[in-house]
Amino acid sequence: MKMLVTGATGKLGSKIVETLLKSVSASELAVSVRNPEKAEGLKSRGVEVRQGDFDHPETLVSAFSGIDRLLIISADGDNATRIRQHTNAVAAAKQAGVKFIAYTSLGNAEESSLFLAPVHRTTEDAILKTGIPYSFLRNNWYLENEIGSIQGVLSGSPWITSASTGKVGWALQKDYAEAAAAVLSGSGGHDNTIYELSGTPMTQEALASALGKVLGKEVPVQQVDDAAYADIMKGAGVPDFVVPMLVDIQKAIREGTLEIESNDFEKLLGRKPTPLSEGLEQIISSLSNK
Image (cartoon, rainbow, N blue to C red; front, side):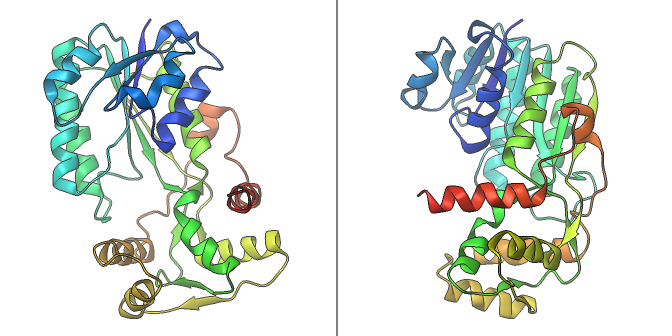
């Protein structure tokens, strides 16, 4: 059986590959990357490195050739770019005769109001239309997404949010990576499945409180409206084009989009996701080591 992971040099992709290498031989694993030079380390460990560019479908057909189980990691970029790239990848998988497709999607993708959701709905639909057995890994929210806010607190700022009492199912990237690796390497049992991967939903206040306990100090929470949040983000140096996205995320959280109760992590990992306090400790440790 031959497995392939796209985007294997990215933050999530690299974690998935490292997890896979703990349970499968390097000869069973291939990766598809835009720039093979960035994957020299994997090549030296016996992983087959293939060149595949989501903007050049012909490279993807070649990259996916002979692959039994494929993991498509969602790409970066604006929605139109991502939809085009993902559609290219799915079509290439069909043309190459891939037998199983796993895809890193978004929590509650079918109904989500988050601005990212159309990308994932379109991609899931494209995969369904191929008729290839699939697994949609609907990732809620990475705890690492909050690094900017954590850094702000470390520098003396309050935790700033316009999400009100909306809840998020945060979990570490490594937990999502382990879940993806379990599905990709699993023999059977994952065909035509949807996994809602979510930590225990909690509010911004609860997250700030957990952070305060780790830091040994009180972390004040400043609840603001969307306009004030946008102004504060601009003042913090966030690029203008990013600010509306951050505001939309806060709005979606406020509306309950990421409040997802699920035990699917336990189904795939045999355990609950890493406790939030432990995850925060790991992030703070990584920040202090930079």
